[in-house]
Length: 173
Image 1 (tube, rainbow, N blue to C red):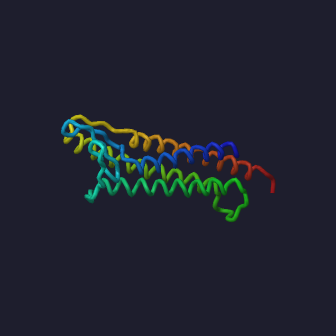
Image 2 (cartoon, helix red, strand yellow):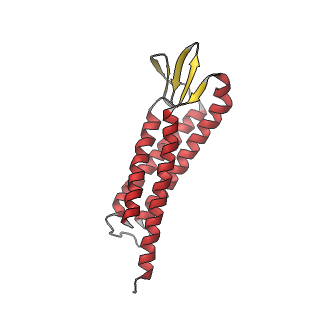
Image 3 (cartoon, rainbow, N blue to C red):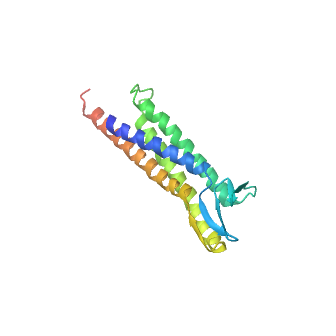
């Protein structure tokens, strides 16, 4: 059980760090504009060496930002629950800490998936046509890697929960 929780905690730390870096950086998309390179993120865009805040309130950016922030918060609370799962002092008999941590990591995975799906859909259908020479960049890719890491953290914690439940049910009362 502890090895699953250790693996889950490792995946959770890496996934949460990647989520925060992906959300905060401005390299989600790179493109050429008027012969010079430009890139944009969720919070600002850069033309050449000069960066500007994205002051427009565009719905898909707001939705992507909100879901990435929710994913980071769920992953952080999952890490807290995962650390508390090592303590093994049951405060609630019906609520298992490894199970709660796994649910939080799956919720984080779901929010990252929503954010990346919205961003991908709008970028490919609208911005991809607007800018001829464009590509997704490393911040966007870090979001997908964070999705995988939080998903595997949830899997590890659910496996730890199942092992704990099997042991608890097999012990005589």
